[in-house]
Length: 265
Length: 264
Image (cartoon, each protein chain N blue to C red):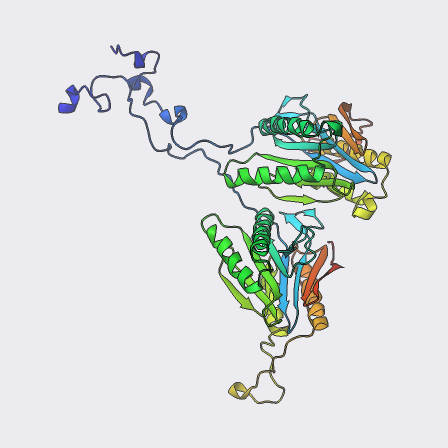
């Protein structure tokens, strides 16, 4: 009853013909079209570590939906050279997923590696660079770079090193890794051909008596053939993969870049 | 009777129901562009041996309404590059003002450059990519896809695209919107690779672009037969802003169900 005679306009008294109280929440069935800041630009990447080299590879197609935006858009970047042409770089980054984030990530990592070189007078080791990349990715944990990154180079002992990442910075050093649209097509092939999974010594018995085929690192030419075969397979079975294959082979003598054609259909 | 001045001219709650203040509020989160309103359709462009040809029609649509039939969507930057805008027209006008400011600063930087400044098309593309990517990171996107044409640092023809998310790429020929489905396949017949594009003459490139504009007018319902066409060469930009589509033939429509006058 007290409210009836209250002079407080915010209470439902007899005073006013309208309710002055401002609404705080958006109306029911909000008329909002939210902007989606992400897209998937397709494509696939691949990296294999050898005894004294690392092969990084990626296709060069850039898609959005069913359209091919570009037939030559590299996914592999040399990181941390002294100058913009990256002539003396020793590390390669591959990014696949959302292309704009990939570009931003590449430029940030490159700037950081250049600053490191300037401050310490030596290039960053892959191990340090790998940890730093993880930190960069995790810094954007709640608005992530939508990219699957792979970092490749040679470790302190001169052995091939491949580090693979998820979009928020979990990372791991591996022998080989496929990323992007056709990762699920390429990775099992790599497991079998690089790590010899499900391969056994002929005639070694059955069940537990089976002996696994002995694992030995690939030679460079074997690796390059494997990469080409993996991508030729992916091109057949995934529409977002094709046009060109960009490979970078990292050895103690530097980084060699190879461009091969893939099917354009 | 309510004598408070706040009540003057307000609909009475007991007659019209409670007033929805949410439509009239300027507190709370700032509203960013959440959808394009007045829009321009496709922009198309193709490289040739000594430059780039770009075209876009002169229509700004309001949904399906052909609202403004005389809007120029190609913009010259520092007499050396061309930017083609598709998507939201107000965001285009914002970018246009921003670029005008930038080009004045650039021209003052080096008056001897004959108003060409030092920013080439590749630099301009990078600038716009960063600009649009920043705006997408702020969840306040500029709702456009842009094509940028001109020359790179090595004085080679340059053509690239940026969209509202900051995604950027280059190609011998590019098209936005409907053009990516209708015009791009035609242009790729003539310039599938950089080498092919480097063999095209200016006349061939202009001819292909005009043909594509015609196809777009046949099939894109948000397009117009008046268009702008720009040719970027080392000498500068030749921009024609009031061209009319020539040699149209709608004979094909007769054979297509739902296009012509057939009733079945």
